[in-house]
Length: 363
Image (cartoon, rainbow, N blue to C red):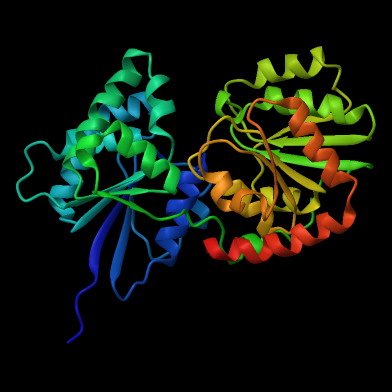
């Protein structure tokens, strides 16, 4: 007898903006329809990744169109989520991020026979909890902590993230599973073949970095490394992404006299074409839960230099087997690894080949 597919409600703040959101979209698209019937709830519409969602997935936007603030959407989103759960009666609700965990915990209050709750842990709890200093961030932290205690299953995206989570939530030891992100899919391989359109590849060594312009990505260390590399090697660094530190980074670029060597390209709908055009992809992060962009760059056939930040990159790159690794916050070490790879075309070609194969481990 054929079993009825399990109804799963995936819950995101918006369908765009980061690796976690892209991972969930890929998960929804590839989950077996014979076993699961996915639906997607969003606090806010308009995310750049919505267009990648398969057409058979119903989408419910919880907040009115006039709500643009992520903070406001979290504060008012719990009631419409509660009503949605009561009406649709999903068997499982999956939330990927702390802010949606917090909204979900509030929404579950008073629901009789609630669905099974699965929560993702996408980043280092030890770091993110220390950074929650504002009243809103503390509110989010308190409610997301409640959600973890309500969860039927908790899924960490790397071994390091799982160990870090269990260190901070001793009472939940043994309830945490590990499942790596879907770091890429076949669309990444195809998109890497597309042209750069209006962008022209500059002469000399081309480095590409991709990620939010936030403290976590530690672009300051990368800029200092670029200045060191430029002393002997003509190069250009393209940084893809948006964020609140853009003005600060532009000032840093000016202070380091890098205006002719570094370009901030903002959000790009197809970052993979830029990755594929690069000689080297660089991740300079101070911490990562996983590091989707590393897998995506490898899928594009681009060798990677990454920091040994906790926790994902070292697992993805197998301690240096699939890419070069530098110490966190050490611009000199990062520069040396970039130069090492820049001067060795055979090694770049070898890492590009091995990287494409390794990326398929995260399909």
